[in-house]
Length: 448
Image 1 (cartoon, rainbow, N blue to C red):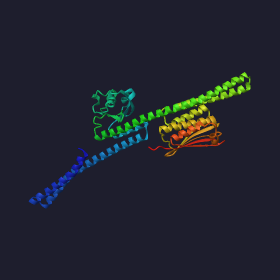
Image 2: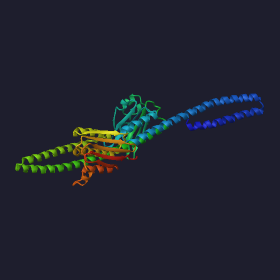
Image 3: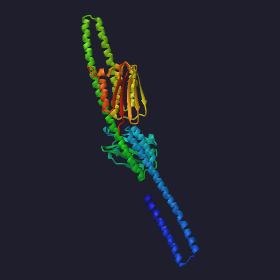
């Protein structure tokens, strides 16, 4: 009996009971069959007999209401946790544990897992399992489309709910059946482009996952997880394109730099050859020393370029990539370099990550090549909605006006300014002769 019917009975039954008592008191009184005292006694007994079961009945209703409210609160809390996780991150390794744990807390399921579709391979892969019998569920980590529960649901786009799992030949993981699981619900993770994955929950209890509230909650959780999977895939595509674009740009810069150096080497080599013919050995040695210096400089540039190309090629957060880069830069260059972080870091979007990474790399390269510094510091200072990046060295510094009036533009500074402008950051150059150099970026957190 549902809650609405119970509430209706709670209203109607007392009215009928009162009418019955009034009728029972009226007719004996009119017929004068009982004395006044007897009437009061009988009516009192009737009231007591009627009120006691009614009181228990109302207690039952109150308890039903209480359980209903508690369950609704669990469902709402679960949806809130899942929605917040999806909103705050595009990393499935962070979103899925929160979503599946919240699902297990709010339903009668004992185990939950997410499968992700890989269109190129026409297959699904188990991304995460949480709950009971983990080894049994991970017996198989890949299904082709149309194969097993995950494959069937992904191919048809329709859910499967089974309460007699051992006798269902479509379910292929025998270890799960042996572990005693009877109930399993598989739901497609649908987006506009099709099914991106499958959410599965399971229980050993054949009566589990039967309430409308639980099934409705699972549908909503599946919708949120589908959004998370799609966001992660889109983020991965954007990140890949951004990294490829940066690699092409760095490759062009390295090519141009090498072309200039090779032209310089060719000119110097011809000069050395003529000097040797003229037997001007001292001048030839000086030219050879300049060639040696140019070769070493080019070697260092190429080595840094290779390090820059490899940085963040893996899917890591900006600060993790930078910390690794700074350490490797310090080891390769011999220049004491440290990274310092203040405040609570927040995650940058992909475009900002790439540009900030390249700005730091360019600033460190300038410090090595031009500053004659002994120490460099990379400082990130985070506020609630702002971030300040400072790359500072203790080198000789320079006159910015002299650089601006020079015969050739300083491509490193120009590149950093352009990258800062591309992400809406304010670029500040703080330097002077003999006072070191500070590259300062002020960035406002993007609103979501």
